[in-house]
Amino acid sequence: MSKTKKKWLLPLTVMLSASMLLSACGGSNNEAGNESAGNESEKPAEATELIWYTIGAPQKDIDMVEEEINKYTAEKIGVTVDIKMIDYGDYTQKMQVMAASGEPMDILFTSSWAFDYVQNARKGAFMELDQLIEDHGQGIKEVLDPAFLEGSKVDGHNYGIPANKELPAQEVWRFNKTLLDKHNLSIEGVEKLEDMEPLLKAVKENEPNVVPFAVGKDYSPLNTLPYDYIIQNLPMAVDMNDPELKVINVLDQPDLMEDLQTMNKYYKAGYISPEAATTTSTQDLFTSGNWFMDRATSQPFADNLWSQGYGYPVVSTPASEATIYNWSVMGSLQAISANSEHPEEAMKFLNLLNTDVALRNMVDSGIEGVHYKKVSENVMENLPESKNYDMPTFALGNIMLTYLNPADPENKWEEFKKFNDAGTASPLLGFNFDPSNVSTELAALNNVKEEFWSPLMTGTVSPEEFIPKANERLKSAGMDKVIAEAQKQIDEWKASK
Image 1: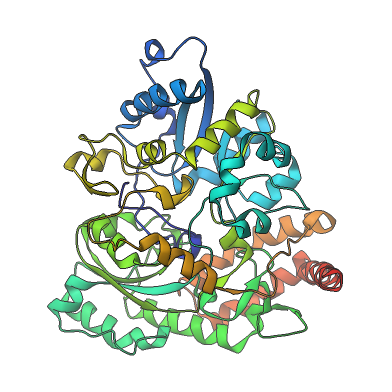
Image 2 (image 1 turned 90 degrees about the vertical axis):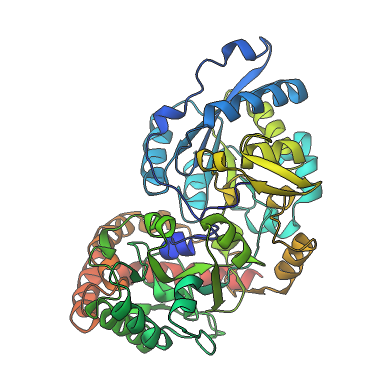
């Protein structure tokens, strides 16, 4: 498996910071170049070709690997795939356009943070999968933690197959250990954003070519605070410690103000890039090693994974508790397009992808002997050519079938299961806001958000000056009406439980 393991989840670093979920993502943006070329002679005439759109930087060796995948799946289930990749920053917009235009596709990546799963399920972009799972997805039901299928239902139905991965979201502060060691810096006792200041100051003073705090436009300090958001990146949330589940405007909360003031202080001190509010990816920093710290969504043994992927040591320390949110349950899914002409074959492929070790690792890691070598039955090492096929593991199905890194303990997947079992559920777990009654207001709110969210969250502007302006604009756009509608739905949902 490509042990660079791109953006795990969540988005919190994608969402969060797109720093990453657990891993590194890559860079170019040319999904058109991913169409399979010259493979027609390899495909049996009777095989059904599926068009599969997935997220991630397009890979140089995609055609080579796709040819091997298709030999395998044609023989197994009479299906081949045409894999089309769209880079992280472009995925949502391009998929929205293609889905609306009826572009031919069979399988597509969706999530709580990219090409929104719930909203697009309700819009009719995805096929309802209940019967298809019963008919052709029994293997999925056997291997997938039941919480994923149950937690990813929309209005009582499944519209996507979740990746079997970490179930809770736990954020950590990540550090480039090479720089920690070089400057004799310790992360012991470092927990909160304000605790980072002495470390950031030391790096800024001694490493002029290093970005002390790697932050992109999707960064948000909010997830270390006790809020569960009704809609991601809009400031309407429930304090998870509030038994009444009252919907509040988080921009009015003192703890958020303190975090944003700290971010602004760090920005002014030069710890954060001047382009942070417009930076769509910080991948170049991770590739070069010219970063000191960021925040990411974690999982068991994440440090091993990051270190293996980047080629230098990475260490982390907890920034939050492990909490199960709707968006973490829905952090990575494969849906079948409502326009698919081959839904049964698509489900057969998804079933095989989530249950077959050989296929799962081929899709994830490429060709044995070219991109990786086996060290033992379930352990692999990347070869130099792996740089040409570095796929986002979290986005490709059941990660618990993927081979281990040499640094991983043998019980890695057992520890994942323990991690999942130990996660604390958000009080809003299972609630999905229906925006249909306030669609006009939400469109206006999103327009306002585009102007203020990234500048505020990255510390680019003064929160004391900017929050009142943002609140005034949000109120004019109809946020009070949306909050009232959300409160009504939550109260009804809570009463029905």
